[in-house]
Amino acid sequence: MSTIFTKIVKGEIPCYKIAEDDRFFAFLDINPLAKGHTLVIPKQETDYLFDLEDNLLADMNVFAKKIAIAQKKVIDCKRVGVAVLGLEVPHAHIHLIPMNSEADVNFRNPKLKLEKEEFESIADAIRKAL
Image: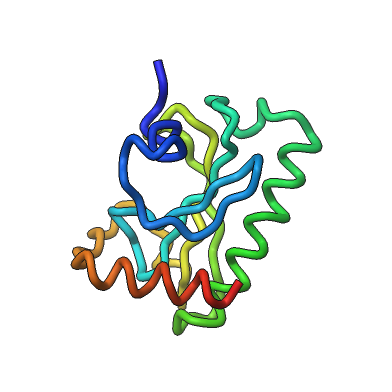
């Protein structure tokens, strides 16, 4: 059975896409900790990040780096934090979270409530910065 992320990649569930290539896909988290909070996933459906083949994992990090650099250009933040949890969706993924302090990457923090137009504006700005 396909994960929600696979359904997003296939276009069965809408998303605010940031970037994609033949192996990876990046889109805004719809329950973000910060504006610009992005998920980077492999298109290959694998549950655990560290089950990915070494080359795929390395390339996924390079793909994520490009997204993080673009986020930093358009989101007012000191850094882009990286988090790997992997319990909420059984599909390997990396969280890229614009942050000004370590507290900004606490997943117990309340999630932001953004309007569709704001998600679209953020996604567009990050895409343009790539």
